[in-house]
Image 1 (cartoon, rainbow, N blue to C red):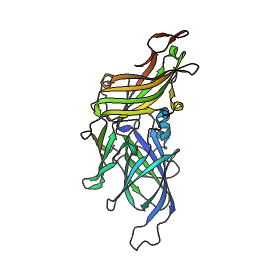
Image 2 (cartoon, rainbow, N blue to C red):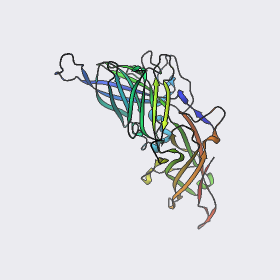
Image 3 (cartoon, rainbow, N blue to C red):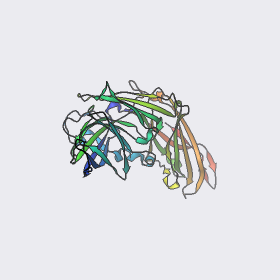
Image 4 (spheres, one colour):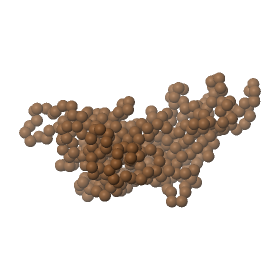
Length: 383
């Protein structure tokens, strides 16, 4: 089994089209900074799940950068989308006085929109996705060496250590046009400057991953599929080696060389006691169960805090139906234990941005006699 390593070269890109709606109150006192009410629409893009090299020169956007839409990124994991919060948490930091304005942009349909009030001045723009993964929000926001021009450090409180969501942080921000042709000249990793204007504003954001991930690829045995239908209703990923929650401290160093600004990401679960148990998929309605077949794999994403963790358990709950759609077994549970270190190849490690794909096959274990010879007690086998 091969490990696909994205490391610092995987980015998530967001296009924010900002349209001016109305001006501020006419009652502003002389000398007060003028704020504008604006509607913000976010159009996210993300890299495909393949290795790619960073593009250092100006190129057509987004194809030559290797990006797809955020929705396309998760197209293989459609059943999980109800559990994946796509809300973006942002904080605009004033260049003048370091004042911070935090906000969120929630997804509705295929768009991200919010109406905000901001001054037409210069900001540093930072953030992370998804907002909901940090159950106690973001704290301890501070500049590097006393100035946000140098970078930033902040803490994400009470992160779920195992999640179906791919946790990412902003690693670049800047202006661009609203024609989907790309950011302005000079846009690069390590730059977070944004000049808000009173006319149309387009904000481009690049994201990088701070979690590692596993892709579980399910099929059913070809012969067994002729007799029975398997429908997955729940997936859980467990590890007794990690805490259920952690705090993450992120340090980003601004630069003008195009280097990835993620200086460090440290995780601490010292203040938490429970061991990790993350829900990756849950079909609360029978119509949402995932039916397996023997040709096309059904894939599920599991993201986790990178570190010195080895032993995991994948718990799969499923029902068995005959080919007349009668349920013959309910709430079957299969537990597959696996050790990450057994999949390591030379020079690889379980760092942030690393992904491992595992194949699982539902196969029968013995012959069970009904009205005819029938295989009716399946298990899930990890390859």
